[in-house]
Image 1: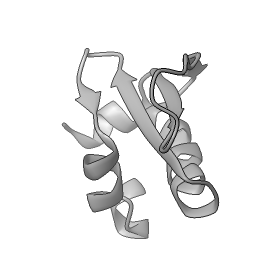
Image 2: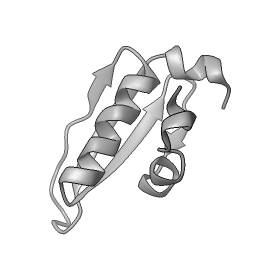
Image 3: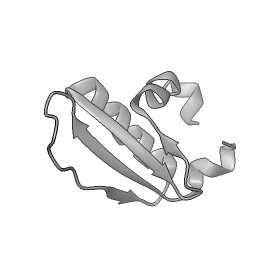
Image 4: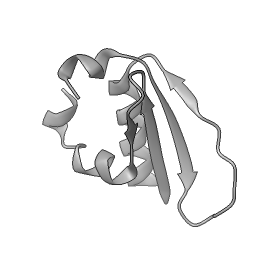
Length: 75
């Protein structure tokens, strides 16, 4: 992933962490940067598992999002 990817489109799906079998709807974002900010907020304020699919087709897991959610990583 390159810094330019942060300015490309992405889709975020937030799954409830403790509710297996429930459906979740993806939400499009104009940039990966925006999707990451919402995903980090969901992790911090909810019992949630966010997954992101980038415009390039990369799938970012909750573990990846947590590991790369330091402020300097999103700039």
